[in-house]
Length: 113
Image (cartoon, rainbow, N blue to C red; front, side):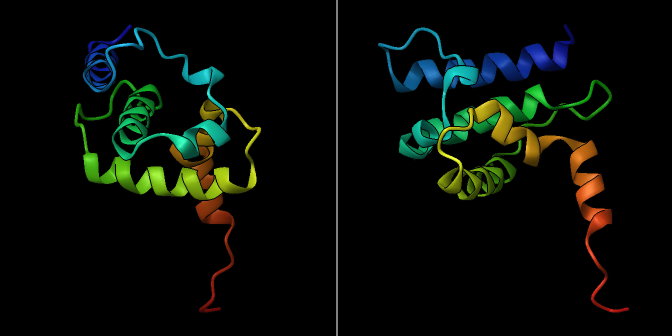
């Protein structure tokens, strides 16, 4: 396990623990899109921040970008609105994975052609 992943996981999980003292563990793979849409703003951003760390490559900079997390949260929520039964990790993979984003970006038609 890389130190960067561990750092982001600790930050994300500590943020969860400060929000709700009752929840000691959060299984993001068990959370459905419909559940994600019902999360408080702070818990949703915390979940996305953790997911950013999960999808970070080992050679990426060790940076927690809350603005980027909020942007990703909005994208995931938009997707989840139409895919309520999809689990959060699968839904987030569409917007977090660099390989997918590179393919999606290059596959889009160029309007200037």
